[in-house]
Length: 333
Ligand code: NAD
Image 1 (cartoon, rainbow, N blue to C red):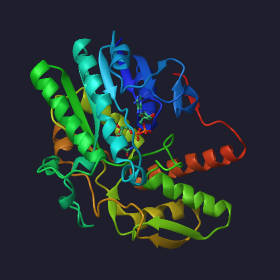
Image 2 (image 1 turned 120 degrees about the vertical axis):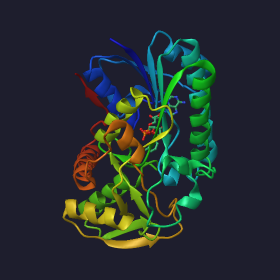
Image 3 (image 1 turned 180 degrees about the horizontal axis):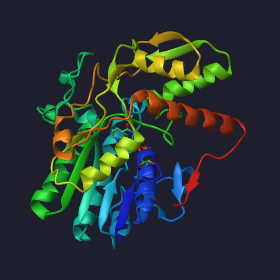
Image 4 (image 1 turned 90 degrees about the horizontal axis):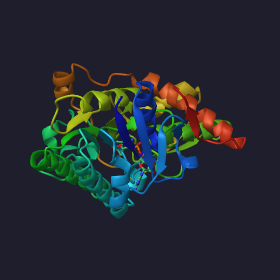
C-alpha cells in the first residue's frame, strides 16, 4: 500500500483524485489551505490536513513519510480571476518550490505537477480556428501573464529537480477541466460552470437575458473530470518525462457551449455580449499526438454528455443552497 500526498485536495480536481486513489486502496494524505468545511469533497478515509503549503515547514510536514506527491494546489480560477490576480497566481510558485524541496529531502519516489494550457505562447492562439497546441508551442515563451508564467517556471523547476537531484517528476498541461464538485460561482468559476449557472438561474427566475464574456466566437476545448483523473494517473506512472498535454481536442466556440447548455436545460436565452469582460486568448485547442503515442489514449468523453452531468449537479447545488443545505460532499470507499 502506497502513501500518497494530494495537495489542493479541498479543490475540484484533487478532490476527485483523492476519491479515486482511496478507491484503489492507497493511503492518502489530503491537504488544502481551506478550512475542512469549505472543501468540495472530503474523504473520511484520508488523513485530511489544513496547511498553507506556501510555507516550507508545512510542506515537510505534508510529505514526510509518504512515497508519492500529486501537487494540484494553486491560487487559481477562471479568466475573471487570473486576469485580475496575477501576483496572487504567481505566489503559487512558493507551493511547488517548497513541495519539490520537501519531496527531494524526504525521499519521494514520484512527483506530479499540474500545469496548464496557459503556458502556451499567446501569439499561437490569435485565431479561433486553432489547429491545436503542440507541446513545443510553449516556446519561445509568451505565456499567459501571471498565472501562465508561474506554471512555466514551475514546470522547469520540476525538470531541473529531476536532472540535478534525480527526483522523478511528471507534468500534465491541463486544458479546461469541468465536471461536478467544481467551482460554479464566486468569481473563480470557468466558462462551462458559469454558463450552466447563468442558464439555471435565468430559467428559475424566468429571466431571458444571458451575458456572455467576449463576442462568443472565441474557441476552447473542455475535458470532463473523469478523463482528467485517468490521465493524471496514467501520466504519473508512465515514462513521460516532459510536460504533456492533457486535454480534449473537441474544440467549440463559447456560443456553441451556450447552445449545448440551452439544449440540456430546454431553455433558450437572449445573448448579450460583454466585450470588455476578461476573455483570454482567441482560440485554444489541445493537440494530442504525443499523449496518443505514449499512452495509446486521449481524453474522449463527449462534451455534451459531460455537460449534462455537470449541469445536473450545479442545478442540484443551486436548489440545495436555496434550501440552506451544506455543500461539502463526504464519501467513503
Ligand atoms: P481549485 O481552485 O478547485 O483547487 C486548488 C486548491 O488549491 C484549492 O482548494 C485551494 O484552496 C488550494 N490551495 C491554494 N493555495 C494553497 C496553499 N497555499 N496551500 C494549500 N492549498 C492551497 O482548482 P482546480 O480546478 O482543482 O485545479 C487544480 C490544479 O490544476 C491547479 O494547479 C490548477 O492551476 C490546475 N489547472 C486546472 C485547470 C482547470 O480547468 N480546472 C486547468 C489548468 C490547470
